[in-house]
Image 1 (spheres, one colour):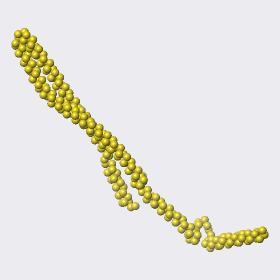
Image 2 (cartoon, helix red, strand yellow; image 1 turned 90 degrees about the horizontal axis):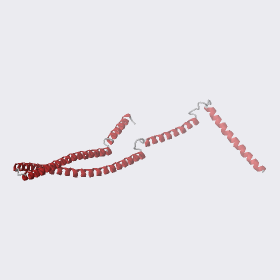
Image 3 (cartoon, one colour; image 1 turned 45 degrees about the horizontal axis):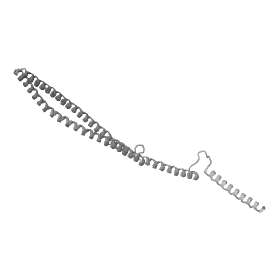
Image 4 (cartoon, helix red, strand yellow; image 1 turned 60 degrees about the vertical axis):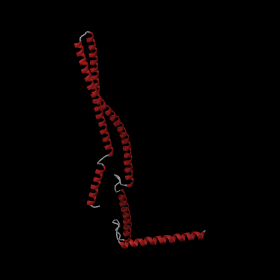
Length: 237
């Protein structure tokens, strides 16, 4: 492998690693869920503000109604005392409170409608968030299972991390083993032929060949002797 090819493979591996980790789907789902929760909290705060305004208007309407009832009672009492001037004053106060109640009621109806809309929206948003949360967990589980399956498949096929080039390494080892075995056979042949000498053997090639002849003759003599002895033993028997 040339140095340029090796560098290109390293660069390609880094680019693929960057692309694979550019966006984690699980983190994206969690981020979306957090945003939805934040939106729900904002909705709750708005709803609380609107409901507070509605309650405040209801309290003001109750106070105005109480003031109108009191003015009506005071007008009746003044009428019984033949104080028409006081009667007119109390009735005027009563009309003022009634007008105030009408204005407050109009504002109250508007705020109440807004509160109802926010309540409905909050309920729907909560349902939607719960559905999203359930689907999010299911998707993350499926994603984790798929990623685990991919990693196992990569390991089995030699693609995954730690298994890169395992097949090539095995083939190189086998080729080297075969090469060394062939070299050993060749070395034995060369030593037998005399092309290579044992550094501990100081005999000349001629002496080696003569020694081999002596060994061969000795073996032949011993074989002939053994055969003769066996034949003699059989005859004696």
